[in-house]
Image 1 (tube, helix red, strand yellow):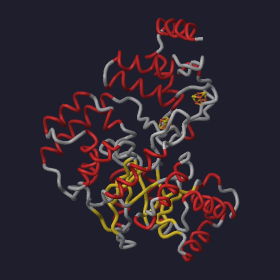
Image 2: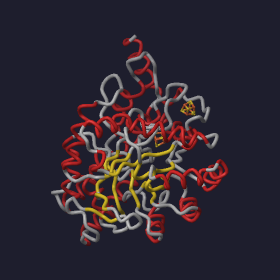
Image 3: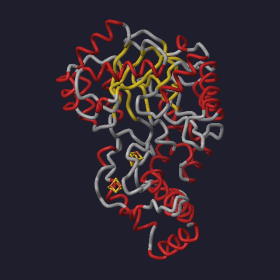
Image 4: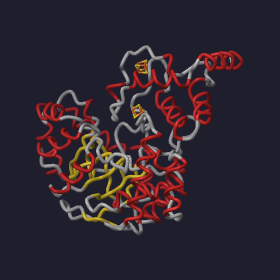
Length: 395
Ligand code: SF4
Ligand code: SF4
């Protein structure tokens, strides 16, 4: 495992961090404790020392806390979690939520604490009015928070302005080879680094699309350039090539993924890419842009929809109809949204344009307009007929 120094705290952080949002779940929807435990223990044995969770990742804080406590691993790692600031209406809410998190995580301090998905300076100023700066100062003085930062999915100008509004210890941004100019982007990474902040990277594989959803032509380009790396490895290497990147979070949920990630993390040194590899990324970027129409990462933040529309599944199928082929996309659409097992059709045409989903989307996707496009392509009249018959038969 390679490590990079957090210049602010002097700590050595593993270049590969464990993102705890996408643990495997059982049929009941609960996180599979045994699988999660095996993975977390293996990751730590492989040198991973940065774990990232959040209040709103259903069941994640509790599971992480239980596993670390049971295996006596808390002191071996740096633990990051996030404040759900939208739940803070009065000063006391900061402490109430924080204490709940400490209890869930079975710890009495957090190494890296983030304001979760802070999108604008106006919202930060609102939190300042509630007294968040005083609260942070108290927590840091008591040692309950070691480092304070914010995670970000907004527009670049807001990211840059937020950097200057407070004496942050670190930040977390969405970044990958398809997002150089999106959200904080490369400019945000460089600006944060200039201020001496370690930068934690989320969505390094764009919700898995750069691993399992790459168009075939893009995969071919990577394979012919260097066949020994997986698609995910190509995604990570692009990030680790940049010295300004500190930790790359990976939402690992299988032993195979962990092994693959760890293998590349062992050789993750800055400026390791050769010109031929850099050229391959450029070609893959072109292919990807042509194929992917809706930049949905499948995070599910927009769900549930009051009309039962499965928004991320609709977008995934639509994208697959371009990135792979129409039949693959249609099969995916039929099985994941249009025809389902609860006698309820969750496809896009059920959308009543209430707008509840749009404000929750960290990718700022115009969901209503995008669903219209999806419905037009994926639900022509003959498909509606098939859906109606299939759903009748299944009732
Ligand atoms: S706008 Fe449509 S998809 Fe979004 S929450 Fe409302 S009904 Fe659901
Ligand atoms: S539409 Fe937005 S909020 Fe919903 S899953 Fe996709 S990226 Fe996430």
